Length: 115
Length: 319
Image 1: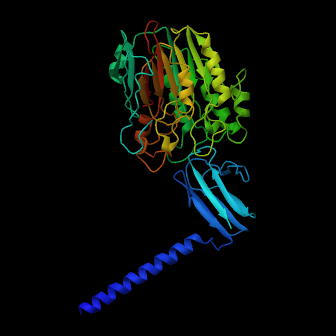
Image 2: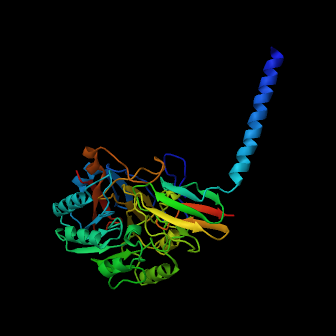
């Protein structure tokens, strides 16, 4: 009985370790979808860091009661002012790291990595 | 400067850097109202009800309104025109009439011409005919403030800064909502700072100074961007003056701090309240029961009495 318990616990631990490893690998890998969404909620970009494949269409949606913008630091992309529920789309055709912020609330920052 | 996680803000009162007369920190949260005033060189604070009884007629009276956000129509206040009208009614009902109005920005919500038009139309019914503006970040969307300056910024410098004198008090209007940098807060910029240094250079130390801008010129809560990155530089030009009053809006709640010779005061919005620093997930509009709303909106009545070191600021709600 005791041996069974040890065996079961060991098996469970092994599964957890494998899953954690898988999760880390998946997290590092670019999102496979051809279109992804970044939500603007509570003065945050979510996810704040997004890794995508070249050619992915990224859409930001403002879920706040306050207008926001999406502006890349070097102005590679720049949305107009997004009021509640308005969207902005950018297609990542070139690899690289794009840091962006809300020009109205510059404490809000985010990053898109295109691989 | 301000601590992030604590319930109370902690300020680094550097007595060596400021006048040694002393300081008083008093903060009034939305709806309570407070008056800080110097009597015989000693700073004292009163609650609003006390303040009204002590409120003697001064040499110069004006009011500050802020953050009218015309065009906002969400649950936090579906009738921002109505509450701005209520603010004007409050101003018109003052027993000691205001000579002029300062509007500390976020006149509109989305910088739309129709929103600017509506504010201008409502303010036409105010008894004080002279109104001085500074832009908020919501007034300079899309066009870097061009429309704002065409309407309110004639004869101003740079992105809209200027100064003027009233009854011996020197007023300085600053713009800290332009060219904001990723990760930063409000920004004055080197051109404006150079102008400010030059603007006050010729004034005697005894000249009372009133500075007004949209975003706070003291670091209230950097985590939410409630401050101005280069405000310390601006304030350093004002340290030699005996009386400096700094008025701002942006955070949609009243708050006051006195440090040495400088009194900081933040006015309530006429449109919707925002949460106390760190007391919500974000600085977004705070939804309160309809019957409470007007107790969290307001106007600030500012009174200058010759010979007094600080201007008396009285906040009153729209209720």
